[in-house]
Length: 417
Ligand code: SF4
Image 1: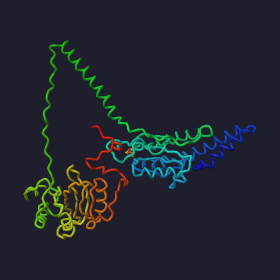
Image 2 (image 1 turned 120 degrees about the horizontal axis):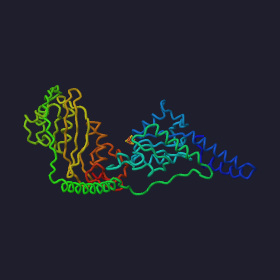
Image 3 (image 1 turned 135 degrees about the horizontal axis):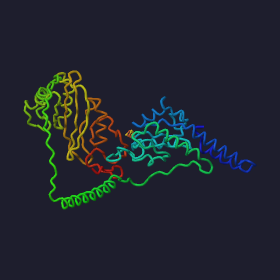
Image 4 (image 1 turned 180 degrees about the vertical axis):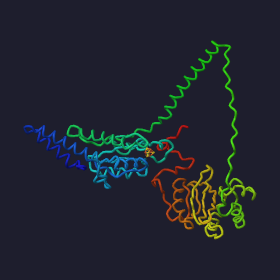
């Protein structure tokens, strides 16, 4: 009963109802059959496996033994859209997965239903402001039948949503046929700013009333002096004793000295004239942060990778910082054996198409993925990268969203504070 194709069974039921109504007692029979079909449909919903973030955990919990949604007939979660008649949207929906969600919805035979579970699905939730990728409401993509607020809603709330949907389905028949709901296409409303303006007006009114009340009090009590509270003596607390952290691998100063011998152009970030003493004072907890000229970037990385003495064989991360005028490509390396770490940053000037620097993905294979991420988010191109494509966003996404100058009012609602 879970899946009945709209183009066959619904049409047949409709025609059978019309024929039956013409017979004696046929109207009662037709209505009874309609009720039976709707009852069966409502109590055997087959949800598609679809959970995208934390709300999905609550949805799974709803299906598991303690709550057990089988008691409500929502038993057979399907991995195929063709066998499902319900999508429970549980979690954040981002723009890149929007097309896939639409495809899944279209692959489902009707009548089909959607429950939107949690703030992210309903409005974008905590990602409403300043987000370039989160869809601000699932009903901008697919028609939603039931909304369940919460972050996340508990299983009981999901049950209530399912029961509401069942009530809706039970009313369906020839008089109220199932039909695809409306999509929202109104512009985004910045409710925060509206609320803040109302709030500011209330605060202003309150401040004026308070000021007036204070003046009145002074007029009524010209000799009033407020009592002075006695000062509490500040307690002296014993200062905590610090334990020295065990020395981890090669010291910052030795690293610097070794590297500067081979590459004199290397300097410490923000302290180009740092003395050995200053670098030593950084301690073992603070990794060394070195600046490398662009023309030596690959050569230095190659040396760090190959040097047996330094042993920086693992790339923890490759990322980027946008300083408005230029980018810093930052490489974070680790010696797995000895534990010392190193940051290497390289200034990359901006050009019309973003910026360009050589790839290091052939030296550290992990850089392949990180460089694609930097390209996607900042638009930095890595020369000779084997597969430089966007990673999180669609190929036709306009711009690179982590750049300081990225502005797209159709996607991003700027947080007003
Ligand atoms: S509504 Fe809350 S719990 Fe649900 S996906 Fe969003 S952040 Fe996670």
